[in-house]
Amino acid sequence: MVEIQCPHCDEDIELEDGASGLFDCPHCDEEFSWSSGTKWSLNNIVKWMNIIAAVIFVIGLVLFLIVLYLLMGGGAAGGFGLGWIIFGPIGMMILGLTVSYLSLLVWIIGKKIREEPVHKVLFYSAFAPLVIFLMIMFPIRIVGG
Image (spheres, one colour):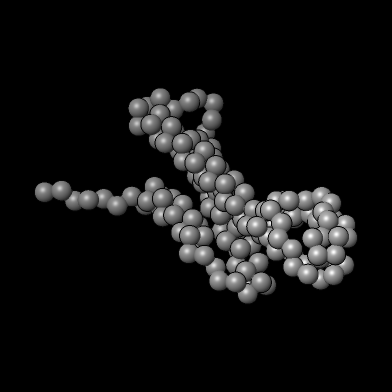
């Protein structure tokens, strides 16, 4: 539920989330229009930026693993240089990280403007792909006996 004020009598009115259209005020019986505005809210923009970042990152990760498998097996695809085969997927993962960090920046700026606290999950969603990326690029070697 969202609480708004009637534009005619300034009384509080509760409407369903996502409701839009023409409504009658229960206090003054005047008609008013309301648009929820949730389509382009800060939360939806950040949510979609994180979804796009995750998709780009996962596609890059899958391509990187495929290329790694082909290179380990000696079956690298001909016609492409080794640099394009390796750095294409890595570039996609970096692009996914960049979009993720841009969503974090948009969230922080939006919350600072509204003076609301930044949620911890957003930090985790931005740093988890970085940790995965660093684990791939700089693998930890465990020395066995």
